[in-house]
Amino acid sequence: MTRPWILAEANYGHVKANPYEVAVLPLGATEPHNLHLPYGTDSFEAFEIGSRACEAAHRRGARVVLLPTIPYGTETNLGQFPLAMNLNPSTLLAVVRDLVKSVEQAGIRKLLLLNSHGGNDFKPLLRELMPETGVQLFLCDWFRGISADVQRAEFADPGDHAGAVETALGLACFGHLVVRDPQTGELAADEGATSPSRFEAVNRGWVSISRPWHLLTTNSGAGNPHEATAEKGHRLLQVVVERLANFLIELDRSPIDESFPLTPRKPSV
Image (cartoon, rainbow, N blue to C red; front, top):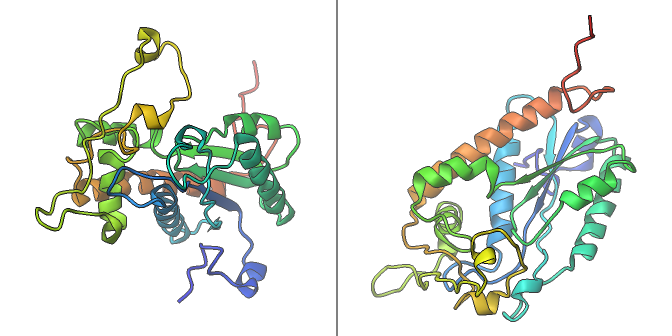
């Protein structure tokens, strides 16, 4: 049975008869994730979160569609690791810009970018496209604000890359691809230790850099994955999916008027 909220499975007959109001574009990456998670981790996460949120919203009446996941992201800081498949920021932004045009041509005026890769930065694109497209753009980096409180509650150290959060989601969503030691059953991963900067201002977050991942990490992992469990992953996933689904429903029902996406101001007395 096809899932009409997933464009790759939908057919033209359904799309023609049931126009969508909201589109969701998942954005992933292809890169190493320590020794135990697959290269497609970010893309798998984006699809799992996006498809479940769209399904939940669809079942409550929202006219929402999940577009195919972009499996490549910006990998310039992981370039020393084999097959970290890079799209430079300008290239990636050009790809997304073209897809926004396709969405607009289809008559869809609300689009959520569901980003699953920390190396992608789409805020500049939102600012650049604002005056030139009729599509209202929204951005969710699911590993940041929408899940921050759950990460703090579930994990002593959520991790930055292939740490406890990503490993827990992997165990929950694609556990057959998470590698374990055949003898002990433990994750086949190192501890995800990272090397500090020689500059205190960088270590304290006062100054930011693009970190050279081959110097920062041992096997590309940043954050200890060993506290991860599938149960923690399911709890995190449930909260993120519910929050996103609620947003998609609100987005579907909200008319685009002169004050969208803000609340109309009350007339002054």
